[in-house]
Image (tube, rainbow, N blue to C red; front, side, top):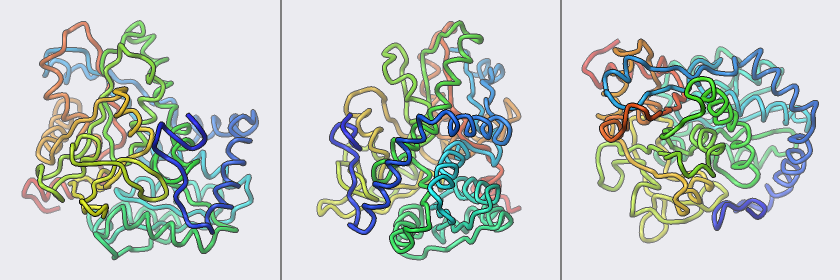
Length: 394
């Protein structure tokens, strides 16, 4: 991979005013990612604050329900703040601290990255602003309140579709006007170089732990690896360690929403109509019309409701490293309920998309095979929304 590129994807498509801060960030990251003191501090916070390593849990009842391969869940939902987002937020705030920044900002869809950013800002005594679409603020009110409790200012974004894409655009605009003292903690494996690489590196602890834990659990055997994909941070963190393992079938699950019609889903790589374009500072696959305008997308999941995908995922798609598939709202909600009933675990609606793919995969598996699903987050934040879908009001 050349600098900032994943095949023909990635790069830095940003206003000139932002280039100096990206150059500064790249230099700092290149320095500190090899710094033993920085890495030791990051490991300390991963273990003592976030709660790593997370468990690789054998879902015995779920396995029995399907009757095929053994199903293991990588329990990122057990992390402090309830999702994998804390892995990246801790890494970036430690970097920002060393760069002398006084303020951190973030965009958020489901609110988990916003909560993680507000959490690390409180921990390190930094000012924090979180940009969030007004639609997402309504469906994720619990996380909005959590961010405010942690001392963050939550900035509602009412432009466009008032969702994650628009929150990201607004965060970039604010950052461009405050680059001297502000670090932008991008929450997914998207954006201009060095963000996709940096986010992947901080999240790749997920895959490294899976490999180590499987040695004890299965003698190292792994046949299928599944993760949900919006922008793609938990998925890239899951897949990266296994990118050269041809024997492991890697499946990225996107949001098929209400159906295949334009605007009814958030499928990017699993949608034949998507094609490469530029969004939020990088080249990747996008949901766009014939004129190159980004199409409004939809998912029941605020964290998957994004019209693009990380550039490394785009490369993995083209090279056949990962197979990308779609799961619709109804399938995701059914999987949400199934895991609650079978294992006593309430998953995030994002993670439920990955779990739902088991319905299609498991009949093809053999009992000696091993499946790992990354449970990217817990579902406390989604309970009210799921209740409404099921016809109940809380």
